[in-house]
Image 1 (cartoon, one colour):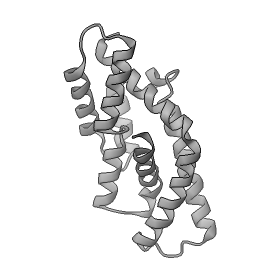
Image 2 (cartoon, one colour):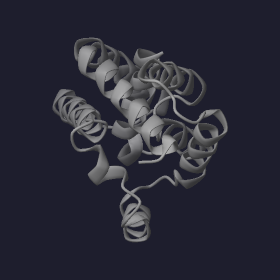
Image 3 (cartoon, rainbow, N blue to C red):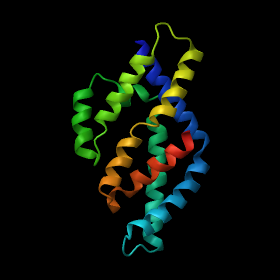
Image 4 (cartoon, rainbow, N blue to C red):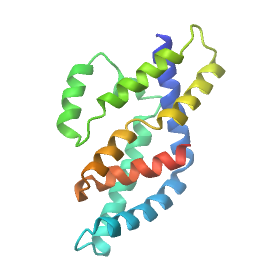
Length: 168
């Protein structure tokens, strides 16, 4: 396994640990952000049932994100073997394009990675990457939502904002 891939795995593992240990904080922050964004967005007919449904969707997205970063399954999510097919499917499913964000993250990892990093060195580099780049693909989600807010994008956006606050 290349040094770049090892550092990326350490990055995802660190994100997994931070999100896993901050589920309660994330849930509370999601509640606050969702209320704020519903008011800010002026979304009509947002009653208690609709609010509860969106909150539950956000919490489900948190669980999905935690599992995405899970070190046990990370190779299946981010493995480059099927990168072309996965990218095509991602573009069909996601309302945001995170390819530039991922490319920037990989370039940063390559630029910062030294040959034969120690375990401690990888963890420190993962922390540095999180401080600089946040949690992939949050920047893409946040910028795409802010460019065109929509109710259908709201759960992803709320989770991205809460995640960025919790991981730093």
